[in-house]
Amino acid sequence: MKERINFNYVERWKLRFNTEHDYRKKQKKSPLKMGIASISIALIFSLPWLWQLKLEHDLRSIEDSIQPYSEVSNILQEFDRLNTDIAIMENFLRDIEDKSKNPRLVMEQVEKLLPEGTTLTLFSLQTDKSLQLELVLPGPPEVARLWVNLRDSGMFEDFYMETVSLVDQPQSINLTLKLK
Image (tube, rainbow, N blue to C red):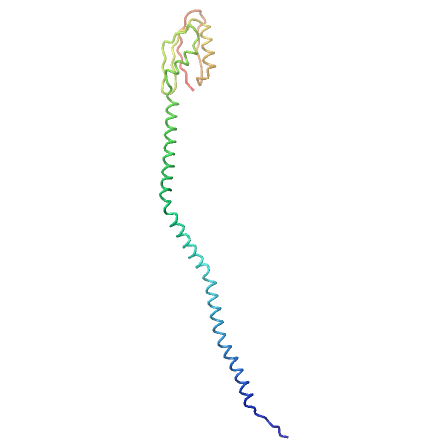
């Protein structure tokens, strides 16, 4: 039996056209997809670089906006430096004032501590705050009062009185004291 083969050219042409068309579509889509993929990959890898460029641009704009304040900053630094110099000079003056006492004031304070009848014959105030006194006291009770007054005054660092005579007669005493 012979089979009859029917050649339908239109149907065959449609079938062939559709497969070629799909193949061409696949070929056209593939380069397009590859291009999009490569561009997106390039963008992803260049994001840190782009971010760095953006940050540098922001930094430049901030520095440009700060530039007018540099003069103010320089003035403030000079102000701080001058304040430090003033503090150093004030400390120096305080040290000098502490080291040098006014002899008149010291003498007045010492005279208040002397018992009645005591004569001050020598008063010398040295630069190292040492005070030399030469006194003439009427008797031993005044020597004891002098010793108590000088010890309890709080004006002197250490107080030491050498041997004193207990004979009831005027006594001459030489003292060297260190002021606080």
